[in-house]
Image (cartoon, helix red, strand yellow):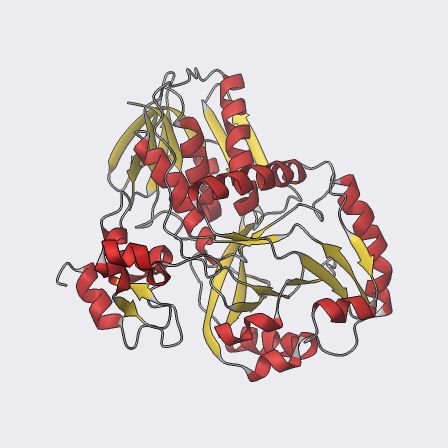
Length: 454
């Protein structure tokens, strides 16, 4: 019997597990995939948002603003890579230029007071490689880039150190709600729990229906992105945002925490909730947008492409509701801002559970937060640290030359509290295999290490 079972091991689910693990509760985090952060959380635009453009008065607005503060502090404490690059919304015609003052006003309604309107000359001074035709811009100096992979891993690692049981490859097939507990019928057997927190991402509405509700429908919205070589990074010193329209936020150009430049995403409603394939049409769309935004960028090498699925619903806000009778909490419809909002949503979940009758008694024996391995390009990596290499030569033995990943880093990842089970998991922990050659040169050696043969 568990006190709380959290369904979903994405960034929000892991944040909830970490938050609740500071109380005297028996907790399990269950995830249908083979790793935490392996679905929507791994394929977003990796921006730490200020919430300047959220809907004023919405739960999302409050959670993003609070989450920005919480996650910034947590990243500093645990070593999650963050770069404060700032952002500029760029207007490409008179109509977009006319919208910028209202966006500044919207930011102020959301409590963000640092936006400034700038003219064409100032936009080009900040981003010289933009294409011709800029009419003006709006600065958002506190927008930042963050590692989307280390964040849920840090939450889950800390939760596990506090006693949370993390059950991977566990798919929920059905729910039996009883008078004192619920039984989750899963692929790994029955799980009994007093409380259930549904943070199942793209499966959130399916789980919600198992509890007898019909309050939202999720549509998988595919976003395709192109990743450019690290030599392009000086061209994009800040996040370049489009002026949003009724159709969405549009295509951006952003530096990444790994030293690359990213162009995207597309926005396409899908039927298949697992289809993260890329498409010829998506690439053509991105290239057409990139040709207008920054023509010089398209002459550079693309080192990777990927697609992610966002949990879009018919609601303009997050869908967060609790049910005291069924001892059930839903955190649904969490869009791409969920990365930023994750710790605030975890706080909010704790408050809602307590208000619904879940007994929370604070623990006094909490271990220190983990310090995560740095995989960000703006901070010293092991191969650059002479003292570290002197103490352990494995940190000076490079295995993945494209990304400068050492044998010591791969060894540490495989011996970590939440080790990877496959190439993708190892990539998210070390950056191995994600460089120019995409594992062509180091793949065999990395595979041998993953299988314990090297």
